[in-house]
Image 1 (cartoon, rainbow, N blue to C red):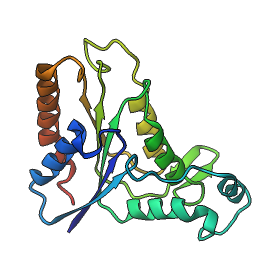
Image 2 (cartoon, one colour):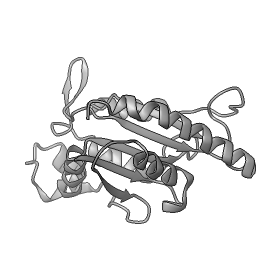
Image 3 (cartoon, rainbow, N blue to C red):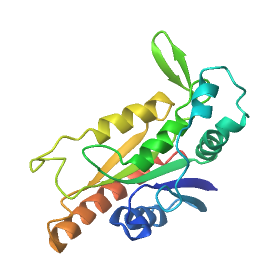
Length: 203
């Protein structure tokens, strides 16, 4: 069984192009016996980081403390899956608040990474990760008119906990009409069809 965690962090939920394309790509991947766990970070929001968490984080509190309950739940959920799909819009050049909050819970010292003099050392096993990034404008290629802080930030954040096998697929220009949407979806579909079998060959 191949367990796939599908994180959806956009306001359109299961109606988004990214979500529909992720489900389509997983179904067409040829991987036998795929089990999908879906977590919609907008429809079912996770609680924000609070004072209790901050105090626990800096006072060597036990990992099973109540302050870490949500952090532990999300880290354990990630660890239990072999493959990760992230469906996200680009909000103001970077990740939306819902996805940033998930990262804030998951990136936790002495649980998902160790701090060393050379930097963070990830404690999470690497896994194929596919990120579908939706944007109304263009942030990749010759037509890009805005900076892309999402891709380097998310790549660095995931690498800090041990996940470096990360592949990005832009769904861009979505406000420029149905033809632009169809082209963006087709480009991302083709990219996934080429990359998914290679990245998941060892699963």
